[in-house]
Length: 130
Image 1 (cartoon, one colour):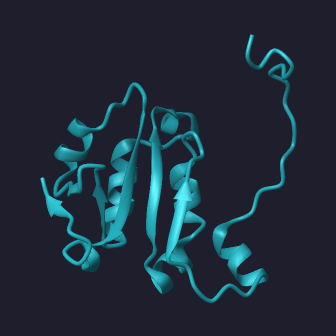
Image 2: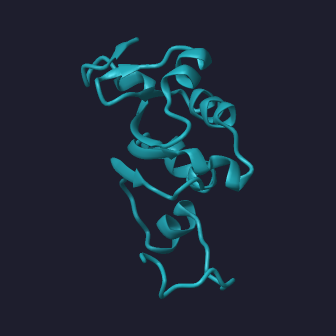
Image 3: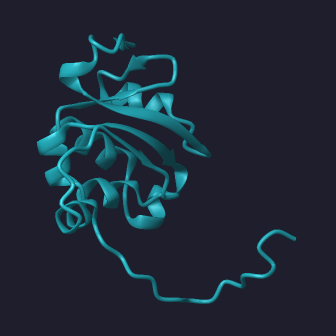
């Protein structure tokens, strides 16, 4: 079976943040990010705070039902996005304007891709409210 060669044994991994990498590598532009971390999404976003403030990138993110494995709730994800003046855009180009729309529209038993878009770019990119 898949994964049979990799038993569930603990192991150590080195962890860093987007902001630290950008500083160490002297990155001076960021227009797009792809995040697919099987539930650690909010941790990645929090580790990219400076990049989000400075560059306002578009982000393709796979929101995972595994959020709770990282002590994160869907509400916390939504609040982080709003606090940074971003919008959660579905693959049909429509963005959530309320927490209720976000929570109702996400298949919490699986995963789905969405775009996090700076609020000031939604019209330019043709995204519309639900």
